[in-house]
Image (cartoon, rainbow, N blue to C red; front, side, top):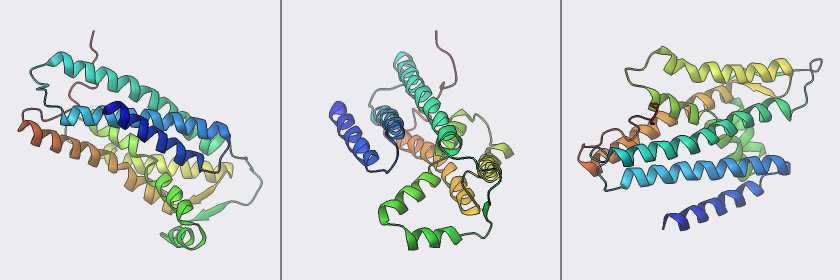
Length: 220
């Protein structure tokens, strides 16, 4: 069942990516990201809905964490490289040209919904919203205490840096709406972790409260 699920999701993901009007190399990178992301989600689903008592069977818990780490590391590396590639390398730097800066909130929302096709709107919104979601996810599973101020201001800092780079290098449109969507998308990561933990607690009657326990520990 899991193999069929993976094949179907990967097939549809790559099919969707092929619709995007971008160079072949970019589509190939996005396809790898889609495969890694699908693998991560599949591992999580198996872990969340498994009837195995992961508190009693530490070995199985460690095997899950090791597999999740390996796939997650590949995904994170490609994710970072794609950020650098997408915001700097494939864009033309024009230091002497006119720069674009939008500081009025929600102006771009109106332009996107008015001038783009539904598919282009989806790509535009999804790209901005989910841009920092992996960072939020990592910050939440790494957290072992009450979140500090960095936990909350990190998305603003990261998004501001992205927009600043676009403005300074004149490689894109620096827009406060992008910062808003990036920041909101960051908190989808912690929300996803909370939902996973809640479901797992319900399934195991609170015996397995945190499916990410030990994620940042090394096993020998």
